[in-house]
Amino acid sequence: MSEQFELRELRREDAGRCADLEQILFPGDNPWPRDVFAVEFSHPTNFYIGAFDEGYLVAYAGLAMMGPADDPEFEIHTIGVDPEFQRKGLGRVLMDQMMHAADSHDGPVFLEVRTDNVPAISMYEAFGFKTLAVRKNYYRPSGADAYTMQRPRLSDRKDQQTDTEGTPS
Ligand SMILES: CC(C)(COP(=O)(O)OP(=O)(O)OC[C@H]1O[C@@H](n2cnc3c(N)ncnc32)[C@H](O)[C@@H]1OP(=O)(O)O)[C@@H](O)C(=O)NCCC(=O)NCCS
Image (spheres, helix red, strand yellow):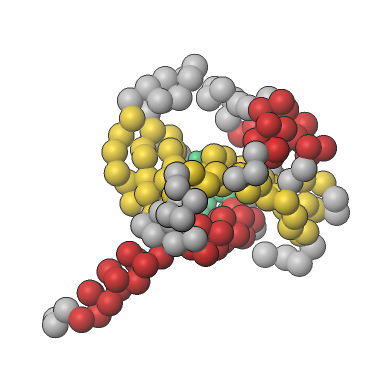
């Protein structure tokens, strides 16, 4: 990623621009309005981050921490990159930040993604997500299906790596 992009946590004043991007990126799937983003940002267990090009928000992502505080799990609530800034590594940078947060708590991460969203699914698979199930008519009003995907917690990924390394070929 070019060094021109600045990363920072999102604040209430960024909610309008996030809502504008949602309208562009998720037109048939109930894009979140400004108020929903403002509430999301205010939640203490949510982590929202944005990438800015000369002060202009061009990518955003949000992760929620859920479950017991001593053994949390995580959910990606949203991620989107301005179409003019896609394929420049910004999605990967925002994913890195969120996955680092989840790994620092050794928590698994869940998400839903449209079954026809090849770019996002490719990105999630590159980060170790696997498909768990299909949820029919998950998105409204489009009626599109979703995959539920999960990225195992860091310690489980390490165990798996050790198991594979220990298996004689
Ligand atoms: C999915 C999305 C966030 C990716 O952002 P991006 O900044 O373009 O992604 P990056 O440039 O960081 O690429 C990261 C990886 O994503 C995958 N990817 C991104 N665009 C892709 C495309 N058009 N086709 C296939 N794979 C793609 C690749 O695995 C890529 O890794 P690579 O560059 O090593 O091949 C972006 O396409 C987007 O905003 N889509 C619309 C919103 C959306 O669908 N969000 C997900 C909702 S669940």
